[in-house]
Length: 216
View 1 (cartoon, rainbow, N blue to C red):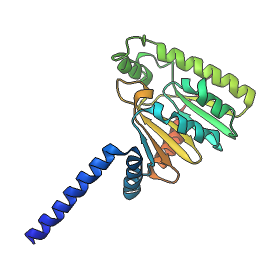
View 2: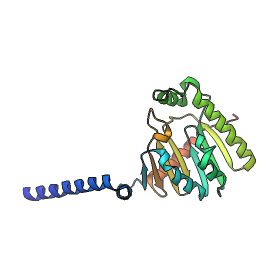
View 3: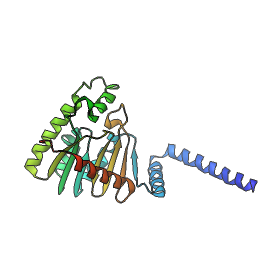
View 4: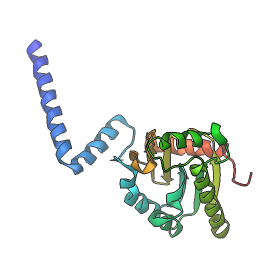
């Protein structure tokens, strides 16, 4: 029995070493490994991005062909300019919903806490800057919604811990690191169906229900 256990453990260790070596050498194998592991445990992840900015091309591609779009963002600037803005505004979306942090919560708000954390590593981020940017982006999206008729915006007052980009097929979830900008934080892609996709969908629905329109 002892020799059997030793043999099993030796084989397991050899497999782990081989997997680790392959992981370091091949990006493609890393992606396949993430998919297989996620499938095995049932969480539903098909890609991991060390930084959110590395996911942008995939987000643009997904949004361009999506039926609907729901976004819970830390400030939403990337959806008002650049490639991602052009992707959703020029796509075939039937409806668009944006959740942005409430910019009027003051020093006790989650947005202020997030700003305070990021300011520790980015001294160029002055106090109140995130609130100003959220107001500007909300105004832009509101004007666009009045013109297009398919864009709605609400503010949420919840922990500013991640960004969600949700379509009828996929969820991109960025997990904000405490002192890092969102673009530098890790991101995962979770397809439908799957546990993480359902989490993103249900979180958005609850936050939207509890949120308020900018004019309120």
